[in-house]
Image (cartoon, rainbow over all chains, first blue to last red; front, top):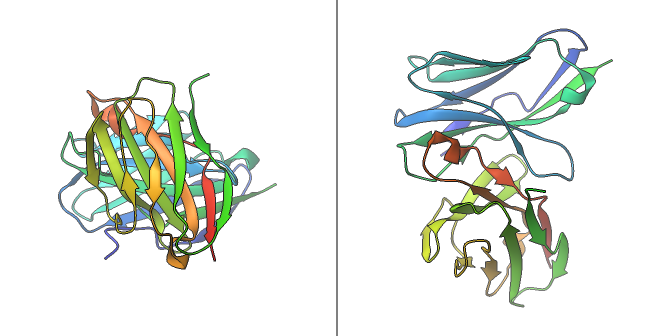
Length: 113
Length: 115
């Protein structure tokens, strides 16, 4: 049972436009959410996170939005740059102190120059 | 340089031949984890460790063992590998204490093929 779902395996966006990556979850116990970025032949790197007490968190060009009632979060990248081309994983955790992270299946983002 | 290292990076082996994938971090992190990445399934946690001598199962622990005898090292052991363990494996570490412990640092990955 996939508790964290990324329904779009791939996404192509023109350089300079907004990229929106979506993630849905089913476990209502999840209270902390993260996005990771992965380039080929490298490990994932942490991008941005959000606690369930917030509905938005910004870091430069990256903004994560959380809609708890819909169990949905999204990552916005504005403006999109060629270096943003990568696979993006959404992840979630339940209860502080538990090191267990549940990841989604990933979305491959391609930025078209 | 702060990093998580894994060895080997690539490994082809045969069914039943015991193997160990090493993982080491130089950031004095308390938490360490192992994941496997498979097409269409994303990253799934195999085992994690909250400190020396403290380990626990993740989502897919069957067929794997781990140990945490030193803080910096967290080897993954496959006692009798099978073809369904062919995958890309990642080790990760993070520090405890705040929610930032979920912001894990990942190694470069080990691609394992079991024939």
